[in-house]
Amino acid sequence: MSNLDRQATPSVCGGRGFVVAEPVRELLTPRRVQLGESTEVRRLLPNLGRRMVGAWAFVDHYGPDDIADEPGMQVPPHPHMGLQTVSWLHEGEVLHRDSLGSLQTVRPRELGLMTSGRAISHSEESPKSHARFLHGAQLWVALPDAHRHVDPHFEHHTALPTVTAPGLTATVILGELDGVTSPGRAYTPLVGADLALADGAEAGLPLDPDFEYAVLAMSGEAEVDGVPVLPGSMLYLGCGRTELPLRAASDAGLMLLGGEPFAEEIVMWWNFVGRSHDEISRAREDWVKGVRFGEVHGYAGARLSAPELPPGPLKPRGRTR
Image (cartoon, rainbow, N blue to C red; front, side, top):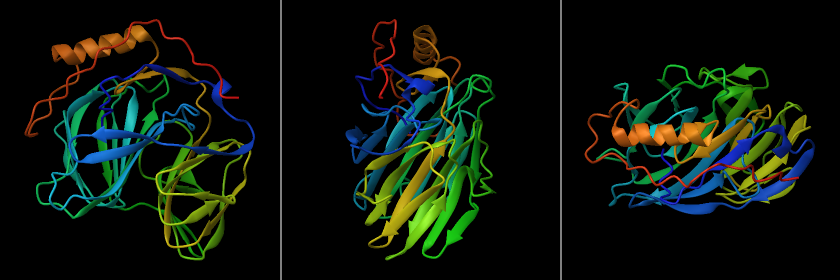
């Protein structure tokens, strides 16, 4: 999914100075962003109070939207570099096309994982004949320097492993949780998991104290470490936890995001993750000139134009703690 913000502002993210080294309960307020004609997203990362969670650098939550008489998601071809995109649905379908020739419909609880590496472009759209409701999350993972120029590739996994406890099913989307590992390729120690809680469930989820964590609320009524989280909100939890208490007041859906704090400082602008203003500027020019990122075939519409890049140089925005 693209960042369609026409006033996109470069931001410096990562670096251990932004990490909270102890358990906290920091509720993040989303920013509402229009994505195409009929899809509005709630942007949780990057956030004024929090830039990254481990290598997770971008989180949008959307829906549930009634798109029975609407085109649904329509994101034209656009570029990416230096990151992975993670598509995760609770309802609906999204058709993925990319410049490698991939054509794949991603359905609920299936992992669509695109590694941009040095450069890729893709589009995302609701199929012409689609389900009434669309509900999901789109997330980006920043690639570490050693792997950010890998060959681009796309993965689609329909069967994902789970961790279970009474009233809780945790589907491991990416990385590892409680000794269970996703088939999706990860380039840093991290975890992304979908948590399905039954009404009245109380459970403790094992965590790695060296990771920092956050929980995105997708649906229902739940408490995370005693804090009520409403759908579309995210609770940042810091580091140093060995267990996460969960309680549901109804059937509820959450996403657990975590990882080893991302030590490298990155520059993120529009749909690019790089290491300098000059690198981002070159990527923008390559997209404008139609080189490097390839071409997406089959999308009924023009590709996305790049916004203007504010002048550099970029400066870190300071620590959150």
